[in-house]
Length: 579
Image (cartoon, rainbow, N blue to C red; front, side, top):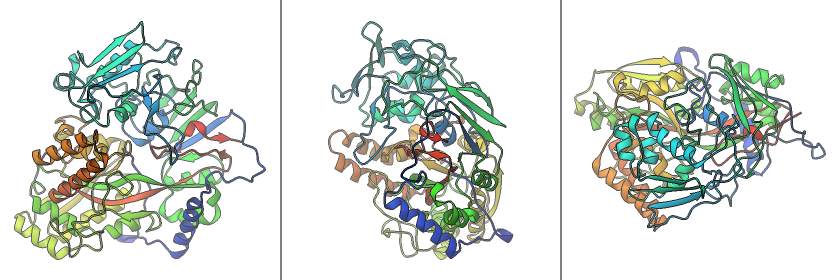
């Protein structure tokens, strides 16, 4: 889901290369992090942590669009809403080597799967209230899961289609009942989920943000600029997507599980939109803001690494950038055309656009490094093929790419790349355009703001040939990445929430996915091997062009302390303490 910003093109679209000073500065930051130093909160050992209170000042280039927690899928919105909304289970907010995948949040304990993974029984905690003062009840839970389908949540199909009754809800969302799928008992505060087929990731799906529990009275449509009441420690009080977002403490919140939803430190949180990343860096250096959403721009890395290293947080993401190729439209309804672009793209250039090898690595497969089941493999590099992949990407192979274009009969066709206007996407888009031109296509770039581009490229009515985008794993899971982005179940024609932007559907690979998922219930090592095979099978069909995986370089103000990076690769904003 995650998106990154901030890039620079040199004159005439050439790469602006990272100098030795920049790389050395960033390497010094990486060395601090690798040695266990919290480089974002490195204060003198004698300095006490500030007390609670004050206003946390945040900045982002643009808003993340809708505030509806069951619809929003931009990483900025998801991060802002973490302390506003709760799910039945949660990913631990304070993660570490021994952190459990999910923990109890609105319920008393994590359920044990029954009947071979078809039944899950949960008991709702007592005494929790929404930010409007209403008590949380089991009917709110049932209504919230029906609403996931009614509002067309992006993950309704990939994450919740195993619930009994979900098939009918996907076909007729407006009349979704989930009859037989969600049972509740107000007296015992119990909620029981019945699945039609086992889902090895169901507990993780109950912890994902789109399963946020809202009041049963919440309208069954995208709430847009109006934030529904939540149960977390903060509530959103004002929002203008062109200017700002404001949050304050939820007066009805009392901490029930610190690891799942801790009380926050700031009294107020204000997010301001509109600054370019260059200006954001300067403003934080001047202590005008405490945190910026965008990555530090490439041409400021040396400055930040040399003079503000103690204010930098650097961490690896399960996030990568890729070009989704529409497999239903020419020229990429041809396998050879898709393979050609994979062979031709210069992934080294993509690494340079993101700051060089200290903060980015070339990616040649659909499971990023660090993801479960990842096995390094590259079918599209010089000297390799889908039948005989190399261990890693080495160099582009333009000769093979041009031959495949000729054989496909698609040479000379016009190709439009739809890319976000923001940041380093521009550099990547121009690189793709040049690559397409070099192998025989008439390529152009169409840019739009990211808030508009992300839903636009998902809608089949817009006939997008190439969508330049990025994806951050919702949680560490091979299926959560591959099934969500390339499963037949993730195709929703005429919808802004069709995450399979390639419209790729292969029944044989679909069966492989189902087999890999089923194995996870009984044999996780075998499941990992099966998902690795799915990754290779998908790349053989080339529905996308993976480009680069990155590390996040975040700058904070001098007064920001207590940086917590969650299992979801986000800084927990509610835990930032300010002087």
